[in-house]
Image (cartoon, rainbow, N blue to C red; front, top):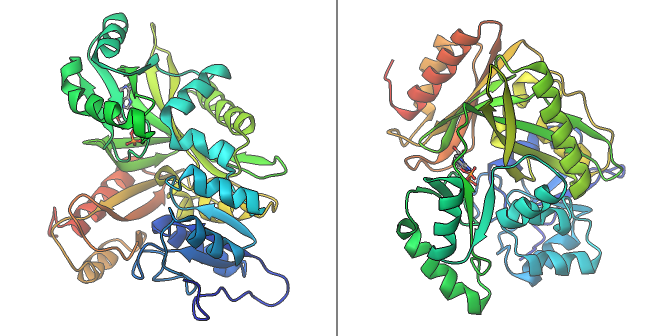
Length: 405
Ligand code: ADP
């Protein structure tokens, strides 16, 4: 797999090589800060034209589930990190046994790979979570639903993304197909061998996220808490900071995130997705939905809106360098996700968008356009939040072909 053309070339003067497994858009967005810091990135790509392989010269193509492939890849790197959470446990264990420096470590990554493990661990450290249960069959789900009230949220603990492993159900029959997979996996030790995760349906008023970074020596930093606006289970906008968030609650969220990162020994960037839930009176509380241990969609605003972006911070953290300033550069930054839509070619849209809104920052990932696929994002920063939201929405809609002027 690794050939002379794809072996990473190190900048002279002792600069490191950071390997990223699974080069999608996150690995791609690490490249600009890596260039600035003379850090060489090496990407274990799934295809030669993956989002990261297009911009990272050293991008051997290989299967991240194949121990030998990943071993050979890691041998060229000083540190190895991840673009996604799907590298199997046996591959991670083999790398660890070889002495490869992995950030985050397999023992912390498991809490982002497995929602049941995450719920158990967060419960043990006292982090506020929805009421939940591991359910093996329809009978157990029925008992849980009767206890917390229907409808309930049922999740496949491993491998879901963008809501694909999440169903809101009013009866156990609605996930009979998933329980059939649980049955199938039980003997083979497959993905659903431990059952499904059932959660109370949280009556939240909005979704929030906290992105933090933690280095191996224990330094940690957090960006302001943001609001993530969801449409049909997909995040469409991120508002930084979260408007009208009680400063005490914001501080509590930040403290919770830093505590979780410390307890779990997370290294690199971690995102905590939360629900804000109104309480009696005019207050609110938060519960944790899930964790991601990598740069996260809710942190894309930091590229243009914060002194240090989550991608630069991730590199600093995994290399155990001092972390950068996380303060916002403007009162508000709005990030709008660009989903695949009408246009196959997006470049022609630049002319109109750039003329219409010179302050707009466009980030496209060089991915093929498929309906609903996250193919890029836009950032706008300034003082008038309503106007920023409109500008971000317009740009995303225009790139998607939803509006034509
Ligand atoms: P994924 O890992 O696919 O992103 P999530 O666990 O984040 O899945 O769930 C996707 C969406 O489903 C969340 O953003 C939220 O809107 C909704 N959701 C998830 N869990 C709950 C819950 N316990 N109560 C209410 N809504 C939920």
